[in-house]
Image (tube, rainbow, N blue to C red; front, side, top):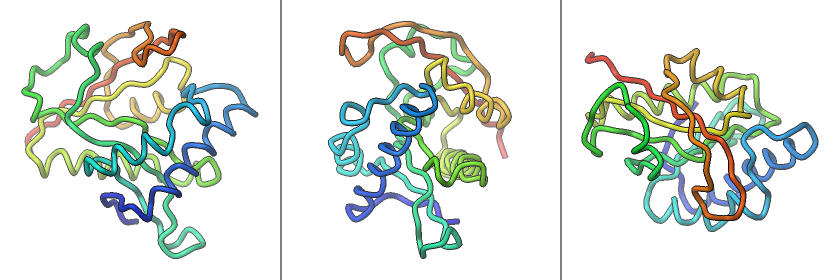
Length: 182
């Protein structure tokens, strides 16, 4: 498996993954509550690409050479509502690595890609001197929460609101993993 920064040629595949997740949810019930054509969109992908914050996990053994199985946005940007939580570790912005808009292609789930992406995300944090990992998801996204907890993330609390100011409210759970010195 190869974890790398996404390139412009990956944009279409990343949107395909996000849309496949939205389609899967439409058929099987909402979990992460993404809406195809609303969020995430090609604009979401292109914005992350332009900032150098979109990452992909490729598996050359997935049937096609270099097929992207997962993607996500990794940066130091914490949503405004993160200020409401008592984080386990006080850290400067540069010491916090945040994961956003993370997804695994539903056709490729249950093969370890989610855990592998998270492992690379954690290694990236260590390599860049970060001291903690933070992320959030909606409370209905039980599968992801279970994986995060299995990987050592702790739940810090919940927040209900409309962070994108779109007219509907969701309940988010914030999670953190403090990185121990190596």
